[in-house]
Structures are given as structure tokens and as C-alpha cells.
Length: 132
Image 1 (spheres, rainbow, N blue to C red):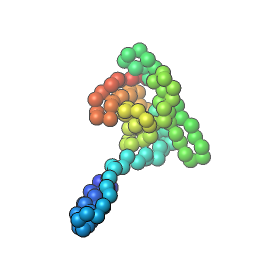
Image 2 (image 1 turned 90 degrees about the horizontal axis):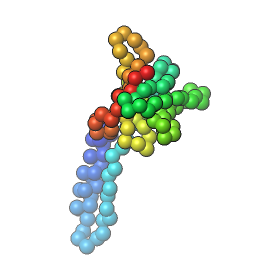
Image 3 (image 1 turned 90 degrees about the vertical axis):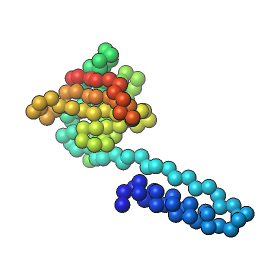
Image 4 (image 1 turned 60 degrees about the vertical axis):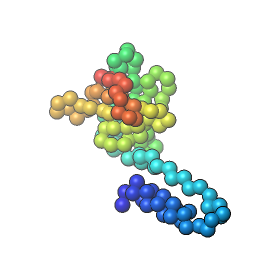
């Protein structure tokens, strides 16, 4: 069962229990909060291939860097305002922590190394395009 279905089932169970209480008894309030997407592990090839500098279409430089602590790999994106950690949410797709920004790295033709980054908001609106 998916996490969303489990949350909905739990909410329905709480609602039934709250309605079954005797009248005049304070049942409290149940608040169900959706889960954030879990960060996927970053593979070695992806970790190394997305790092570099990308020229944004507005003239700024996007710098993607990484750190490694044992098997733990962490990537950071810097749009000129300081590095922000980015977490992998799909194949060559990342979400910036604390910002409404997603980065999708794309490669042209048969190349395996990404040369373009599409920067979008959480709702899918394109904010910028960057080239290596």
C-alpha cells in the first residue's frame, strides 16, 4: 500500500473514532500531514557527472558541487546566493532543500554526461535553462 493510501486510511480511522465518541466529550483534533518525498541515494556516476558549472539563460552561473563522507554523497547547487543542498528524487532529477526549486539534468544525443539543466518550480513551471 502506498504512503498516501496509508495516510488516507489512518485519517478515515481517526474520523470514525472521533465520530463514535459520546456527545460532550472532547475528542481533540487530528491533523494528517503529507509526507515529503524521500531522497534517493546518489550513485557514483550521477554524483560525478552532474557536478560542474552551467551558464544560466539570465547570465548567472549555476555551480553544482559535491562532498563525500564514506559512502554518503551530498550535492549542492549554488545560483550565486550560496550553496543549497539538493537531494535526488529521480533519475537525474533533484530538489533543492528549503527552496521551491527542482533541477533536471539532461544529456544530448548519445552523451552520458548531462550538458543541460532545466530548473523548475515545485509545480512544474520552468524558471531557467542552463548549459555547460
